[in-house]
Image 1 (tube, rainbow, N blue to C red):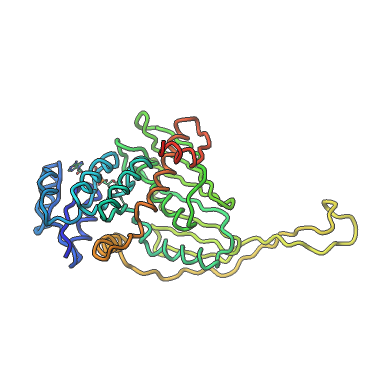
Image 2: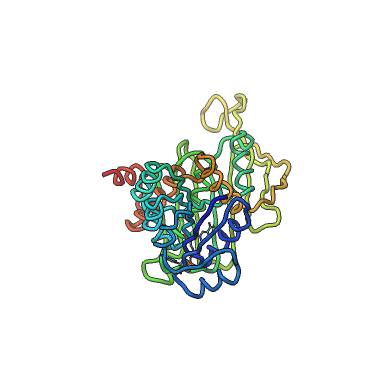
Length: 351
Ligand SMILES: NC(=O)c1ccc[n+]([C@@H]2O[C@H](COP(=O)([O-])OP(=O)(O)OC[C@H]3O[C@@H](n4cnc5c(N)ncnc54)[C@H](O)[C@@H]3O)[C@@H](O)[C@H]2O)c1
């Protein structure tokens, strides 16, 4: 049994609390909440958890082995560092921190103390994303050309971070995971329509090695709730639609460029042969996916990483390039959509 505390139980925190509470190998002893309303919510719904306003006594309790940080993004670094310094294994909601330098500081502290540090990249535990990853890795989709993601809705508008830091950690983590790589450069366009300086709509273009492109569209200003990832390969194409009944659709579709034998008569481009485009349109598959709740798998991975001493899937090493890409996108937004190389962000982080 692992004894935990959770900091923050606002909009998202109840989901974490519910999943950890449901696992027999965990006991969430405390929720630390600044708001009396939210403490009352915890008392009324989680009778085995004590809701308190202050963190210090909780960190001083030697029975608490691990802490879940579910507060707004800007507070993640300071709170996570405080928890690690108190000797607690630490889970931090996405984004792990607001800069690569902060991620590195947390990772170094965790390593030095032999503690587990994990980021809340829920989609790395999502059955549809795992099925998509298996398709990419098997080669069934052929060469990956590009990915585009859409995470759109009307709200929830935040005042502490823009739509990029609020929503795109998911999309960047999905793209990095599927491609097994980090982007080399990012270009971002975005506009703050509702609140000055806080972009509610962002379009980010990520360049991956091997000419693979990813386009991420996040927005709080859209008429429809859309959660979609479209991946186009040379052999097959896949759409993961998180709000559809059938989440994954695999299209055996594509266009092959075939070099034809030299034809008699004048050639179109003065070449010995010509390329012909052949359209393929085959079967459409909608595979059945596991119904496991991703957040339950997140909780299990964190607890087993602590118990068995292995790295969780969403460890600091996987969270680092996500934060780096978001930092690059932020710089691009600030500097008139300049193309920002990730090397620039990483070099600035070590100096
Ligand atoms: N994994 C996901 O799919 C997902 C989805 C939504 C949000 N999130 C993440 O969850 C985190 C929380 O988001 P939210 O939407 O619940 O925010 P929120 O503002 O609704 O809730 C945050 C809560 O933390 C409390 N709080 C803040 N600082 C505190 C402190 N120092 N001590 C004690 N309590 C404190 C606030 O009183 C509030 O109740 C964010 O990092 C967000 O990115 C993750």
